Length: 325
Image (tube, rainbow, N blue to C red):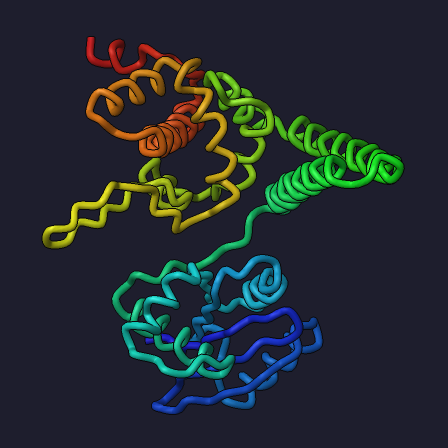
């Protein structure tokens, strides 16, 4: 069994808990390259070899990405888990305290249990090309959100102050165009990426922005469409208990960037995409509400995206009928 290292990451520091030979060793490091090297020295002092270690941390935005890559390059087995898993695991332990030190211990115990049962998945970094594409698409989405907020603000301020807002909007427009230009150049530079982008664009209701976001956010080693749906959090979640019969809704336990990119295409796809249109109509006839039909269309749309990329063939609305004949 591997020696387990639980890491609770924050902006400026990270707390570690090492479970080895019946001991629980704790240490805190700065979230900097120097802190990363100090971590390796601490592990060496504890006589832990990289090949013996399995490190685990939560997927908490950008704060842990540099450390993840550093540990992977140092030949450690590393995992990045959904924070919701750690939260519910802590509840199952009836954890009453919440400190960085305690969180590191809980992450370590979670990793030890899951690795022993074979349920902990090792993380591998995306290729430099895909990492760059993901950074650019997320930056583009952030700038568009900032522009939308500035545009709303323009409606609520005095007229004589709106010139300042217009200046900001022009700056955002230029920034958005520049980032989109970088994304287009990046996709064009890779024949494989360009091919997959064109395959995604062949699906009615999938535009260039949706296609580039799916490419950027969907892991290259995703096993199948079912795994992709779980990764994006577009699988249905039911809450039926006793007399209570709740509506099925999206689990939303997954990649929010990917899920957001699927929403508007699924809404428009109920009219423009024959597969999504049939799905929405079938659910409407069963009495499902609009949110449920949109969620189901998001799920189906992602499956179609995975399907065209896996097959290497453009979207065909009659594929199922052709395959059966």
